[in-house]
Image 1 (spheres, rainbow, N blue to C red):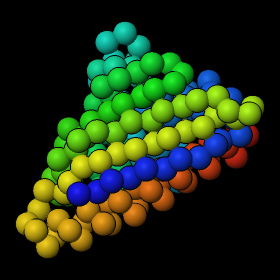
Image 2: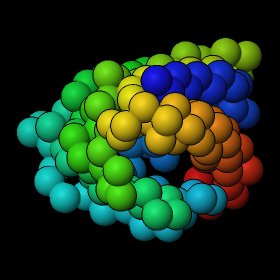
Image 3: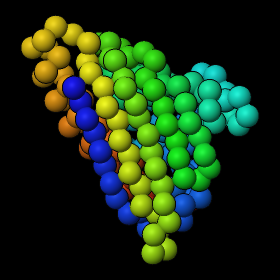
Image 4: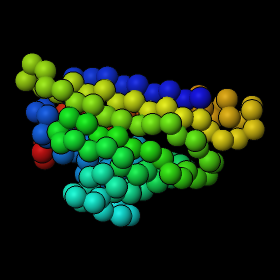
Length: 148
């Protein structure tokens, strides 16, 4: 089982942080993300609930469905498919809250790599470590990005 939780206060307003995190097509601008695209738009908003995004980092390619979208405080998703190895994803969510002129972000994801026991244990650990680094790097990038 991988269980990722990254919590950080980002020195940007909540609308800017939420906008960057919900801009699925532009995840490719974040460090560690090699490509991103919106495969299906959301029902009420392009990047909102129902949207399907594809994100690639190294050999890992994830198709993630946006399952919750409450601007500017909450975004949830579920990995529908993963390559090169399967995943059973319990949940992914990003919660945002204004705090002292910035935004507290709590990004969590939990699941399991679906391979035989030993491979799964090793890959779960790798996914947890890389996922934590990737999430933290994305939040740091948003904070330092002068284009926003």
